[in-house]
Amino acid sequence: MKLQFVVSALLGSSAAIVISTPEVPLSARIVEARPALVGSPLDTMRTGLSGRMRGPLFTYLRLRPFKDKQDGRIGSYVIGFWPGERGRVTSRAYQNPNGFIEVTPENQNTRISEHFRLGDFLTHGQVRVWPKYLVLREELVDKLELVITDLNSRGILVRHMSVMSGFRTPSYNGPGGEGRSGVSRHMYGDAADVFVDNDRNGRMDDLNRDGRVDHLDARVILDAVERVERLHPSLAGGVGVYKANSAHGPFAHVDVRGWRARWGLIG
Ligand SMILES: [Ca+2]
Ligand SMILES: [Ca+2]
Ligand SMILES: [Zn+2]
Image (cartoon, rainbow, N blue to C red; front, side, top):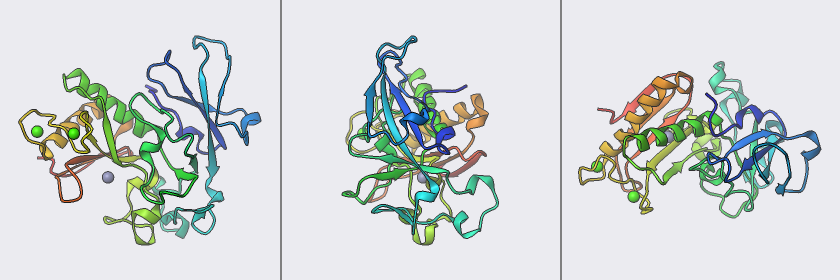
């Protein structure tokens, strides 16, 4: 089942369009740009395409091919190097990304699905540097939306799921392009560290309603992922359950690496 978000198929091409309209409440459809649009200076344009959608808003997202990264950066934005650039990976899951979505101050708030915006998945840091570059796989956004749908269906209302960390450039992830635990799925655009934050206080909400905010609330997200993966085996991946520390509240890591993995305080 194809869901709200379609982008990864496009990462090999040079452009994509987000269609975002009130008529399509699960509001992201990214379709391949016609060649005529490639290099267009327009970030957004209204178009009168026929069909069920009236007056859809098309957002033009520029996709830069992987080879545009030179000396570990595109323009002034530091990205770093993937292990695959050093010839160290054989598994398909660890091949270099095909390219990068170009994120600008103007397009960073583009809605890519019902609950997420493009900028939610950006690597932290380099605050003043634009454009920034993002690797993001459709399956990740699909999975997160399905987790939200699952929780909502069980009476755990999710109005806002915060992405504490989405894509991480190899440079950000760790020295030499390898993170704390080796190569991170965050470097491949298919992982997000998330918590539900309806009250927008920057920390997890009390999802299990036991009067506390702790890793058991992150485990509520794990349980939802278990149900989602059962229904959608193609979205198999990792879940890590983390407790709070001085730097952050409890959260769940969710990824779509392609095979099942579990770690942390999973019970
Ligand atoms: Ca909260
Ligand atoms: Ca709780
Ligand atoms: Zn993570």
